[in-house]
Structures are given as C-alpha cells and as structure tokens.
Length: 249
Image (cartoon, rainbow, N blue to C red; front, side, top):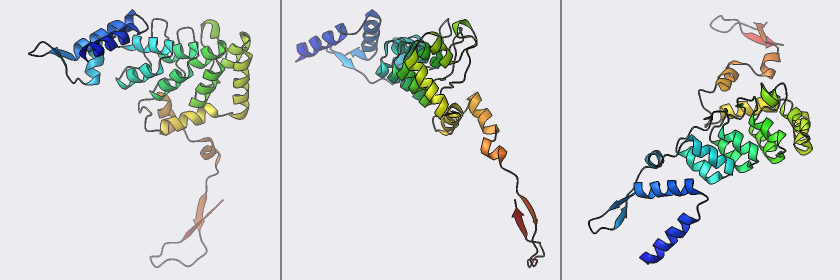
C-alpha cells in the first residue's frame, strides 16, 4: 500500500504542466509534512493562508493561471486573498490576460473575485477591448453581461480613441463586433445598470470609487420625476388644530 501511494504521488507530480508547478508542489508537501519518532512523514494541518504564503504563491501565479485558463487554480488563489487587480510592469491584470487568451470561465472567476472589469493597461486597453480586438466573442459577451463598459474609450497605444467595437472592426473581428453592436442596440444603459446591481451585491467592495459615486447620484427616473407639493386641504381641521394636507401633482 505504501509503495502504491508513493508511486501514485510521483505520477501526479510528474504530470504537473511545468517545473514552476512542480516546485510549488514540492514546497507545499514539505511545509505540511513533519517527521515522526519512527522516521515516517506525518501530515500536519495548516491554515490555507499560511500555506499560500509558505509556498510563495502570489499575484504572478494568479496571472499565469489566468493566462493558461486554469479556472480552478484562479479560484483557489483568489480565495487565499490574492489581489485580483494586481498589475505587471505593463499594467496588465490577470483579467486582461484571461480576456486576451479567450478563457471565458477564468474571466468569470476573476469577476466573481472582485476584479475591476474596466481596468486598462499602460497601452490604454481594457479587458473588453483586448478580447474584442482578438476576436474572442464569447469573452466579449461574458464581460458585457458582467457589466463591462462598452462605451469606454482607450487612452493610449493601439486603443487610443477607440471603443471595443472600433477595436474589433479595425482588426476585422466581425463576430466580436456583431456581439458589441447587438449589445449596444439592446442595452443602451447596460453598463450603468449592471454596475449599480454590482454595488448592491453583498460581495461589492465598499471602497469602490464608482459605487460611492453611484450612491450619491440620483437615478435617471428619480432625477426626472416632478416634485409633489402639498397644500392645505379644504377639510375640517384635526382635533389638534393642524390643517390636513393633500399632495397634488
């Protein structure tokens, strides 16, 4: 039995995708194993957050998992407290890497973990723009449904002055462009409504700048609704002598 389990562990270790993952596996098992009095290894319990810190899993690991489309690993890293909006030297986030490669499920996992859907890199491209310009129509649709802003305009590089639709059209990605056209036509205020809903969700971050501004801004319907004014009614006064009032349009 012991030999069978050892052989199985070795096989699982060898099947890991690359040396980076094998090193993480080795550090993880060393951190949860201690030698008993009889010389045999004994597994000891360890909080997951401590394990993540020991094995050195960080934002770079999250970006790699997102790039490779390893959704399960993305969820584990986010649960361990990895910052979903951490950036590399080019300003790319894990969400942008997942969108660039067309990994729809990883995009969803990162959004659930609190990733900023519209965070642009140093070239001015948002995840939606990057997905659209690479023709990943499934990711484009998923980002739109999650609340990405299809009206955002790039601020630099190849995206300067362009929306996601214009970026897709420029590169001839007609399927992605069609998704964006249909969405814009049927959801003129989609990004606003989705963000308001996200701010009301339990998982919404209280420190979100956009959510704070949205709470202070009256809705369109409330802003356009005429005020009702109250006037004294031509009815008998109450016992306490206060004139009753009725509200007119």
